[in-house]
Length: 286
Image (cartoon, rainbow, N blue to C red):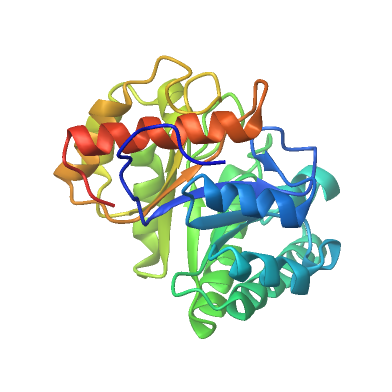
């Protein structure tokens, strides 16, 4: 399906979050790998963030083949399904943490097989939730797990991205400022932040000001409107956000992470064309 905006901007660093699981309905569901990836590429998308529970759950060879066939780059693997399905996190008891880390290492290896220049592991929901009791000890376990992952990722030329998620979904690291303060403790350039316009619309008092303050730590941005649909289908001021990204000279990926209302292909094209049009208006080149 071709784009809808006449004279559309060719955005090189535009991507989409996909999954094979119906559990996460805020991502593009892959029903037919060959067909869906072809349509994603036809929309103008260049890169993919894949959400999986375990590399054993998918046909990795077929995925890589179809991505390359459609000139799509696998740049990120998201890990939230590990917790959503198996209820294990990076701040659990040792045996659970070991399972999570083992699976994430296999995801790193899959990224290397896909052979993209940029390679990220996204840590969001799987980081865990603070429970009643010793919060300091729980955070110590999380930090220890992340330090281990950062080192393992560095060995494989992969970078760790910590996702900022709104307080309605988690009680831990809900704002860009909180995330920046947390990862600044690592003194390591191999861990950065991924921020999300939907989450920011709920917990950031001033989205643009928060982006500017956190500019040093932001490596990737998820795009969706305040209703979790594609940009332009809700009330978020994306022109202001894109103008802010231009101001801070942001060159990272913009990844669509959106729920579908009716037609996932049509809505993806509309979202892409809306961001492309805004980018053209403010002279922002990604």
